[in-house]
Every structure is written in structure tokens, then in C-alpha cells.
Amino acid sequence: MTRLAREYQSINLAQGFPNFAAPAVLKEAAARAIHDNINQYAITWGAQRLREALARKYEQWYGLTVSPEREITVTCGATEGMISSLLAVVNPGDEVVVFEPFYENYGPDTILADAKPVYVPLQPGMPLDLDRLRAAWSPRTRAVIVNTPSNPSGRVLSRPELEAIAELCRRSNALAITDEIYEHIRFDGEHIPIATLPDMQNRTITISGASKTFSVTGWRIGWILAPAALTDAIRKVHDFLTVGAPAPLQEAVAVGLDVLDVNFYRQLAREYRDRRDLLYSALIDAGFRCTPPEGAYYILSDFSALAPLAAQGALVSDTEFSIWLSREVGVTPVPGSSFFRDRGEGGASLVRFVFCKTDDVLLEAARRLRGLSSGPSNRPLRSAEAATRIGLQS
Image (cartoon, rainbow, N blue to C red; front, side, top):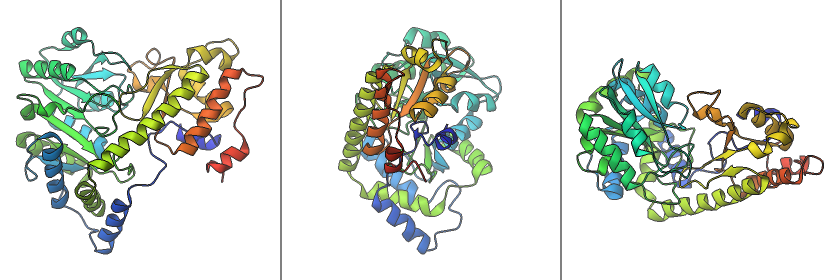
């Protein structure tokens, strides 16, 4: 969809990368590390300084005591953290519970580990159906993937929901593998690492990273917290997959963790809340049906009411609608079926928009989207002037 946005000089609200600068302290630290010749391999499981900074932060944030020597592994992003974890702890024939809609990699990662994904719905604005969750569990369940705040649903799982998941893990000796990459981008509820619940730290693999919090998606610095025995297996897989994450960027993330205080994280959440409200309002005005996300920076939206506008009365797929919106309106989303197991059924009337963009980009996207409500004959489409102003044209 990013390629499509470039082709149509459309506003890219598809791929989840910010278009604004990372904190200066991180950029300066990265440059300093390069000039200080920290340019060779770091220790495979992560630079000492970063692992120690992470141990301090998890103690401060969540009261979790983690050994930087034996329980933390630095990876090439949280995405690598997930596949390394699954390959390390899941055996052929095992089952892994995956909440649907899901970040695109969870299902394929499970299959690559020769396991079977078992899907449980987790829709925007809807509570987790605990009865369906229990029904999905079986004697073959090895793990559950928990993504909170969630991409793409925007759900922040509540304490009762997490406690129900934890109880199932304890009863069956299953693992919770958590993706907490959006832990600091949250608008409602609280972030509760499932590892902090009773008797869960010893059966939880916690995955997170710097990409979203520090707006450095291209740096690929993620991390895994896990009990020592699991960490030993994870590190072996990680070594064979990627050897190690970029050494100077690890040093820079360590500086960011040490220097940026609670005010940085509060401001991050406030600014993302404003961006969310801006885009959500425009989507509702345009005729989409959607729910304000509780966390992360995505809005999953139903375009059913707009489908006739896109196809002159005929039914259109989520992919066809996404292409039409990109070409004709100048705003590019992701087809919703990307986040469901059955691309022919799940997400067929959904698209996902991101709001990790500066206000000028979101305001122009809002203007274009609101034009949909005025009908095909007089709706204001994008203008070359506006495209140039926000840097969409070369």
C-alpha cells in the first residue's frame, strides 16, 4: 500500500511509521556512538548498557525484577522477537491462541513454527469473549499471543481479561507471549504486563521495542524478557536468525531510556490522543463506522456505507475500496482482510488507517475524507497545491 500511495501521490495512512522526528537525545546519542567507533558487533543478545537500562526501566515502570545477564535479549525489532520466541518454545503440532484481527505476522509466525494457530475474536470496542477463549484452549495449547495495546483493534486489555488469560496459562502450563510495543501509546485503561500477575513471570515472554515509543521504526531495536531457561533457547534462535541488532543504535536507545522521564511518555500519549481524535472525527463525518481505539495508533473502519460510492452501486472488496480511496480521494489505508485468517471473509468491509502523522498531514487527510460525505459530483478531491504543501509530490 505504501507503493500504491507513492504511485497515486496519496497520503499514506497505511503503513505504521511516524513522519516526525525522533527525540533529539536519541539522534545525538546514535551519532556519538558511531563517531566513538561503536560500529562492530554487539554481544549477540544485546549491548550491556541497553540490557541494564531495560532492567532498570522495567523495575521502575512495572515493578518487574529482571536479570540483564540471563533474562533480556535485544532483537532486530519486536517482529524478530516474536518469531525468535515462537521458534524457540513451540513444537510441531502445538497450538497457539491468536486474537483476531491480528498483526499480520502472528498467524504466519505460528505456522512457520510448525504449530497451529487457533483464533479468538477481539474486536474494536468489544470485550474479550472469555467463553470463546476457554473453548479455544485444548490440551495441545502451548502458548497464547497477547498484543495489548492491540494492532489493529486498538483494544487495551483490562485486568479481568488478562487475569482470565493468566488463569488458563497456569492451569495448562501454557506460555503467554506478549507483544507490548505500544505500551506507552495509550488513551484508556492501564498497561498491565501479564508477567506482573501472580505466578506469571515464570511463564511469560514479554516482547517490546523502541520503534513506536521513540519514533524510530527504521532502527529495528526490540527486546525480549523471559525466564532464564526460555531466554537460553530464544538467544540460540536469535543468533541464527539475525546475529544481533545494530550496535550504535542500541547505545542510543539505552541513552533514551535513561534520560527521558515520565513527562516524555505522558506527552507522547497526549499528542497521540489529539491525532486519534482528529482522524476519528473525520472518518465518522465521511461515513465510516469505527470505534475510537483505546491504544496504539490505528483505526479499523467499516466502509460499507461508502461502498456504493466507490463502485456505483456494486459491492467492492476491501482491497478494491483501498485502491479506489487511494486513487480517487488521495488517502491510502490497508485492506482489513490483511488482519484476518480468511482473506475472503474476515475484514471484507474493513480498512485500517494510521494516525502516526503530523497535524498538517492528518488535517489534509481529514479534508479529503470529509469530501466523501458530499457525494461523487461535488466532493472536494485532493489538490496539487495541498499535496505539494505536505510533501507528497517531488
